[in-house]
Length: 249
Ligand SMILES: [Zn+2]
Image 1: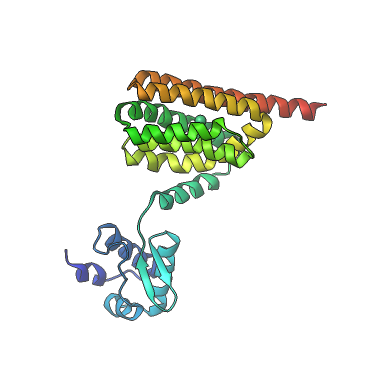
Image 2: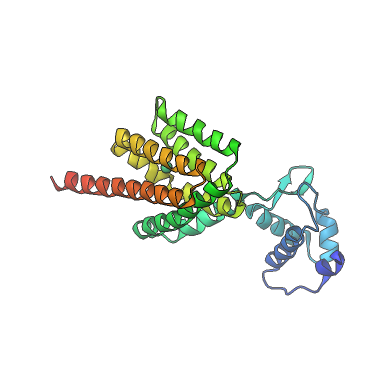
C-alpha cells in the first residue's frame, strides 16, 4: 500500500476537514495505522495533504468523536483500540435520535429477541466449562440478596453477557451490546414494578436456559430463551396496565 499516495491525492475544497478525517479514518481502518500508534504531527499532515493545520485539527476532533483516536495534550494524537463500545455508543445515538420511544421499545425488544434466541442456541453448541461457571456464578448472585434495582440489572445483564460470550461469535456480542444498553431502563422498571416477581422470573428462566446450554440442547435453549423474553414482555404489559389504572383513578 502506498500511504503517501492516499494522503496526498488532491482534495475537494468543500467540507475539507471531513474529507481529511475520512482519509485518516481509512488509514486507521485498513490498519496502516495500528492501535497505540501516534499519528504524524499536525504540521506534517498539513504539509503532506496540502491543507492548513486548522483543518487537520478539525479532522482530528472528528476522529476523536468517532472514537478512533485519542488526543493527548502536549503529546500528540494516538490511534485507539477499536472496541464494541464504540459501535455501541454510535448505534445508541442513532436509535435515540429517532425519537419514537414507544415504537422503539417494541422494535428493540423484537431485535433483542431475534438475537437472544439464536444466541442461546449457539451457546448450547459452543459453551466451554468456564462459560458455564460464569453463568452459574451470576445466577448465584441473583439468588442471593438483592439490595437495589441496579444490582438486579447488573445480574440480569451479566447472565445474558455470559451467554453471548459462550457463543464464541463476537459479532453477536457487538450487535447485542447497544440493544442491551438501551433496554436497561426497561429492566429497571420491571424491577421497580414488582421486584419479587422480576427476580423469581429471571432466576427461573436463567436456570432453564443454563440447563439446556449445559445439556448441549440448542432447541431447548431457544425455547427457554423465548419463554424468558415472553415473560419479561408480560411483566411490561402488566406494568402498563398498572400505570393506566393508577392514572385512571
Ligand atoms: Zn434475563
